[in-house]
Image 1 (tube, rainbow, N blue to C red):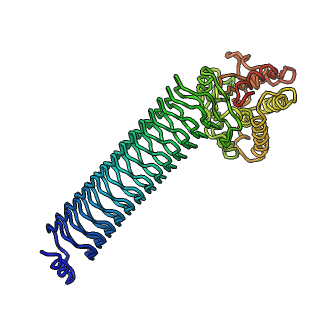
Image 2: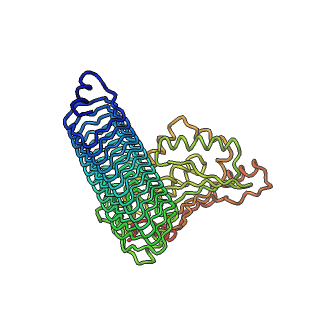
Length: 517
């Protein structure tokens, strides 16, 4: 069949051209939409600018074919061979290309939006400035491809192989790279904001200057990766491997990386405002200084010796412990859950309920928080369900007055300002919570909340401060009846000396805070 005969048959409504052999044919500019070319051979054919919208080329051959500017929207190319084909500026949007072979194909500026390339082989293909928004590339072979300046927003590349690929300056925002192979991939200045890279292999990848804001890198393998100047703000790096990674001047503001392995990594100049520094493995790290300013503008610099850096990156999570001199019973358990739920509704910084250790005689409630500055403010609120709330809050106010004294120049001004603001906010919230018809009123009728307490604050350097210690804490004998014990506590409460931490205790505690002089 000649080109003319094919076009004549198509013109009279014939559409089935399966198994046709049109190798080296010239159909440039023809309109053959919705035609059936299954198992056909168009190798080395000139199909430039041809309209194949909705056509079926499944299991066919288009090797070395010229398809530049061709229209293949919603076409079927499943299991089709397009090796070394010229598809420059071709419209392949919504095309089905499952299992297709496009080895070393030219796809410069091609439109592959929402195309289905599941398990396709694009090894060595040229996709510079191509559009692949929301394309399916799951399990595809993209090793050594050139995707420079391309657009893959929302694309699915789960378990794809991108070894040695060039994705520099590409838009990969919200793309799914879960468990993808990205070894030695060039991702310089790529936009990976909101991308899912959990479990991905990024060993020795170049991510310098990349945008990884809000990206999920949990469990990712980033050993030896270049992250110089990368923006990892709010990124999830939980349990990631960053062994020997270079994070020089990387932006890690509010990043989450508990369980990350930073052994041998370089962190000089990293921006670490409000980034947790506990639960990390930091053997042999290199870090001369870090930027702790909220905006990452070097206004708060902390310099280190090698030993200082190790201590800085091995914090403990700041905690508040309420030790109650009574075992928790079912009634109190129910009430405490409701009370802290009520407080959390008003004060959003109380993100998680406390962990509880229940002994035969005592109960320990532990609140884990994000930063040292929130310790006093949160302690002001979490004590609310207990009878000791008033005395504890008074102690916190006294400590704050002491800290603000002009002769006690301990904290950096910005941290002191933040601490004052947080406590003032907590005080306002406490007033609001007390006015509500809340479960806090129930706690006043339950004996557990009347028991003596001890309140211990622990900062990120594992320094403790007892902010409140009830005069009769630990003095109730286990064989005494509850009624006798409570009456004894009430009758002697007024004459007992109220505990207040000393000035030296407070100074030692504050020395473990961030941004110290």
